Image (cartoon, rainbow, N blue to C red; front, top):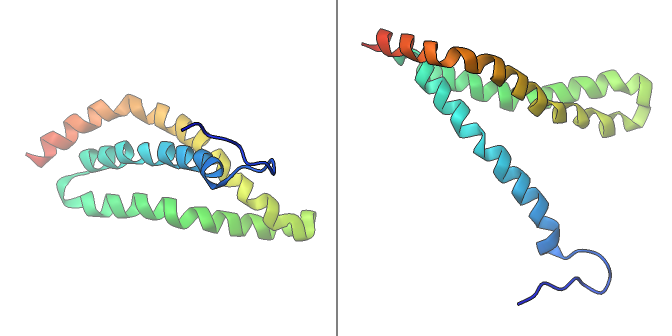
Length: 119
């Protein structure tokens, strides 16, 4: 069956959902390797703590950052501050790439030390 665009010129629900589904699938696929690396590098007795900290950093700091930026942008943008503050976390993937590239150089040594300390 061939997909046909609706006559109104607006995309239907299927067409409108393809972009977000693809982007969320891509973002979710990069989370597992980070969590696996954290679990592998952390000492045996600290793995639960390392997992909790890594999860809380992502889930707690994002909304907090948006709120702080909205308050800071209020004097400059007024009512539009809530429009511009959610744009800041969109730079997080760029920062993640830089931090991951720097950290990737140390993972092999960290894994050897973690395996040696776990016995």
